[in-house]
Image (cartoon, rainbow, N blue to C red; front, side):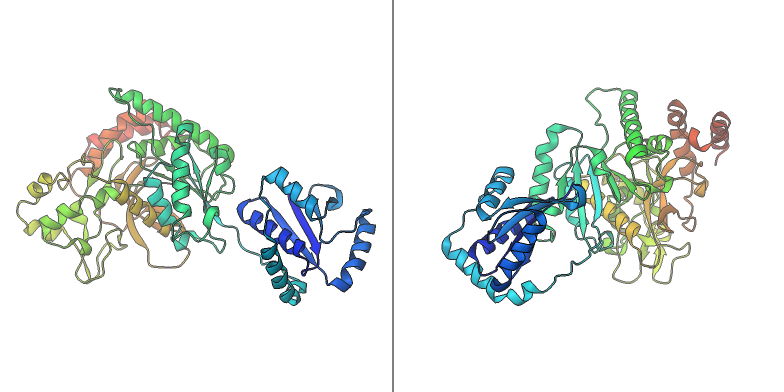
Length: 497
């Protein structure tokens, strides 16, 4: 139901300017408050007022005259409010607004309105603006979500002409204070050109999904002290199954779903995909590129290649069960101006790019150097948590979102992310795995042009994840004969993929 307030009068009247000023301030602070003004000269106002009141069957003679119109009433019928005093009484009762203004200021407003009378008399054609892109962040936490929102509000590919609106939600009502803290800090940021409209709080994820373009799910069920691993996984399984039910009923078909800040990332993605039948499979993506970022200092010291000339190493695995960093297939620049968040989309690097494997072969003590730094061996499982880990993950998420929503036909780039496996690189079909991916028709898909990992990386990944898939009955949605399919995975793995 939409209600619009009308103020009709003569601009030289101090009460007309006062009423217009109050209505304008309310329209900026209240999302559902709208108003329109009807401007007449002193010579024409009385004739217009007499005819209009006759049509509405009103008996009143006021300058200004105020009324409201509710869209759901028959024929948009007008409801009389009265003169300026009645208008202010009404606003005070319903909106608790202070309408007081000094006589001197009211005179200045009236003089200004009188000078702008020709413009005000001109019919104003409303500008049609596109809807802002809507992003919902559920599980929002302080301060990591602050960093993410600051980046998203400045991310041009994500914006429409109407800008962007970010909705914050958390299922824990005790987190409401954190959400307010995030909103207040964003409101005063210099980067925020939408003011109070940039961030809104919603009390349910269903509301957050209304016309939503991007759903960001932050964090999984935290593991409690001394909690068995199996119990922890069961709690995450239940949470993702519940979220899948909500997505089936409320998620728009065009909405993309990004998971980040999760220890059981690939497991949670697999559960969502298993039960969220209403969401397109390639609209589910998980952030994993930050795991490679954390290894760059150690790789740089071991290889002698400066960090600005290195791209992130590919991240492989069923993140949450295992993850591996293949430093042999790190791409580095032979010229300046490199970026560390993505790699060229080509199997054979150009003359300005080379793979690091040859440099590492010439290096001595590479494995020892990396291990001593608490990072990874060439194919060793990563277990170290880095300080301020949310910052690299925010950066990786923003890079992923930027490419995801960029409609320009730029050269494709490759990053690491957890996506639905289609069998590329020998990974079993139907699992969500971290692997090198690139944009294809607006979807993140495995990049078959990227060099395959060497050694036993793939077989190690599959052997660690097979028991989880069997225990939780995952991949059933994507196979006609689930038992036969799982037996084939086990057989292939034992045979050395």
